[in-house]
Image (cartoon, rainbow, N blue to C red; front, side, top):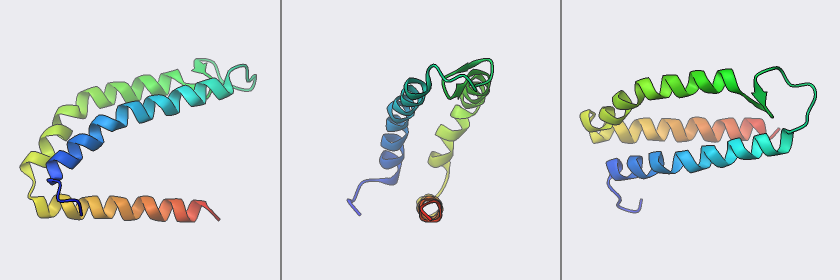
Length: 97
């Protein structure tokens, strides 16, 4: 819509995911410190064992994720992006009930 190349849009989105996830994690930790019903190995609502697994899985798969858009046709990337946006919109709409 803004005539930005799809690979540049993907790169910008990927770069912005880190501060967004960081802010969400800090917010979850901050608002839940001192809760008594949380399991061991948690920092607020952030379960550290799960976080370690997510970080390890991410570190292993990042190279493939970074190469994939460069190897795919632009038409496929646009279709995949459209499906993901529609799925997220449906999730938001269904969650508002």
